[in-house]
Amino acid sequence: MQNTLIDAGPLIALFDKSDQYHKRAVSFLRDFEGSLLTTWPVVTEVSHMLGFSTRTQINFLKWIDRGGLEVFDLEHYHLLRIIELSEKFMDVPMDLADATLIVASEVRDISEIASIDSDFYIYRNIRKKYLTNIFI
Image (cartoon, rainbow, N blue to C red; front, side, top):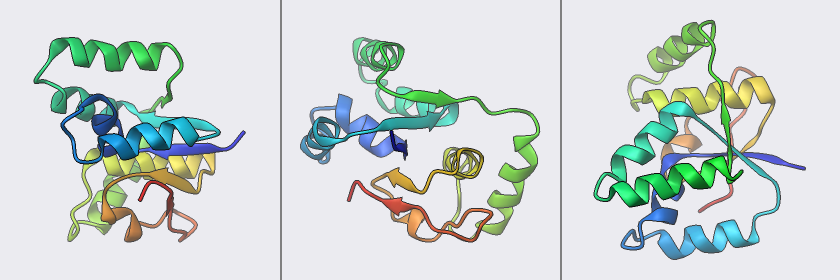
């Protein structure tokens, strides 16, 4: 089964019916075949952006708990790579969540991402490869 990374944008849209990407996120998830992987900073970002409703935040967390996606466990030794990526892409700039997704892609050898951000057309992993955005 194919692993695909997922960024905050599609997750926010999935749980926020007023989001401009909501229908696209629902359609994407309905048609997607594989496993979704994200990181704790992405989960934090999504939870923050869903702060308009505690119930919506809880629904998001329950969805993760039911297997909606896997959360990649970052280790202390990943911090140096996160710093390296943040410095390299400082002019974009790369935020913590994006850096952790690149780290997850490197560790798990994942080449696809679901994101609404164009930044992933700029970021490259340690193998100098771009992630293919399958959301937009």
